[in-house]
Amino acid sequence: MTTLIPEYITCAICGKGSNHRLLGSSNQFGLPDLDFRPPPMMRDTLPYWIQRCPHCGYSNTNLAELLPQAEERIASSQYQAILKDKKLPTLAISFSCFALLIASEKPINAAQAYLHAAWACDDDRDDEMAQRCRREAINTLKTLQPFNHDEAGLWMGLVLIDLFRRSAEFQSAVTACSDVENFENANEVSSKICTFQKVLIAQKDTKAHSLSDAP
Ligand SMILES: [Zn+2]
Image (tube, rainbow, N blue to C red; front, top):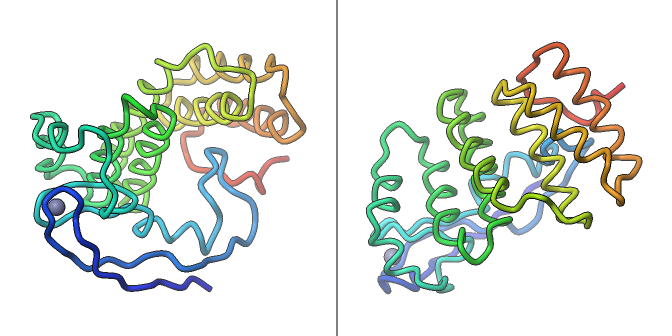
């Protein structure tokens, strides 16, 4: 089961406090999705992976910690626009704001945060906003290409395939599959994912799929 720990956290930016629930523990039964979204019950803990200050809008995995140049980045028009975006689900706003704060120093984590924002939109059945968040993730990952043939590179390559497929960009998804298949550190799991992705791409399937559905 999932356990949550209530905690009153003081914001590192504005110094005001707010109540949050931290993830104590959870579990995973089954295999992840093709973009590595974990299976239940961990899957449903997404709202507890990010915190947003209700007073100043600062978003971080821990509001008590200060991110580099956070104050000026929060004040930027881009950050404020996301914060006030009424079309974007609340949780997706938090992940997108966080992505913007870390994009310069930690682009891989920023891409991951945009992916998390897309999952939040998926849960809200908001396809339009999910696609927008996936586009942000794609744009961030593209700045890191060509990917290194290491663990992080393989993760990015595999995630990129799914981002393209879920966005109905099938030709780009096929190209991303070929890239991963040529990785020096390709393994049994990555081969299995690529094979399954190619089946889904051929069927023009844009839905989420678990690795447990792979043939
Ligand atoms: Zn604050």
